[in-house]
Length: 119
Image 1 (tube, rainbow, N blue to C red):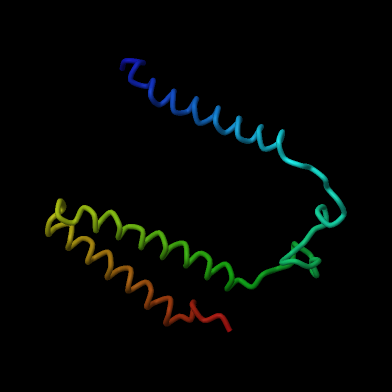
Image 2: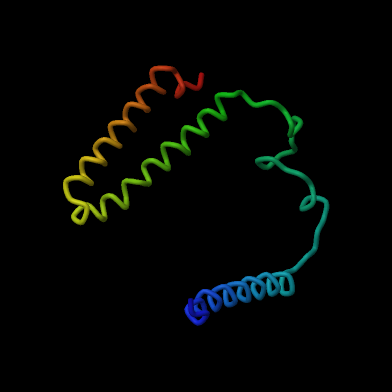
């Protein structure tokens, strides 16, 4: 391995770190900082918080959030598949059809179990 092959990566890291530090420093240096009671007060949607931040949430909230992440990530596989469809041919097409069937089966299972009902 020639260390010169890593020079573009090193240069990219150096420039991005320098740019980040420069922009944050300029923001701190040039911004106006006049805190008052309203700016430093805690807020939640425009009004004072009414409950403790450590209150318990219903488990369905977490279930819906996890399901969203799972299905969002699975649908993200459709974009590279669509771009490379001509290159991967019929085996790739059939693999994606199998993936979509599994995806649909999981969605129907969650739907039938009531995982998407919020009440």
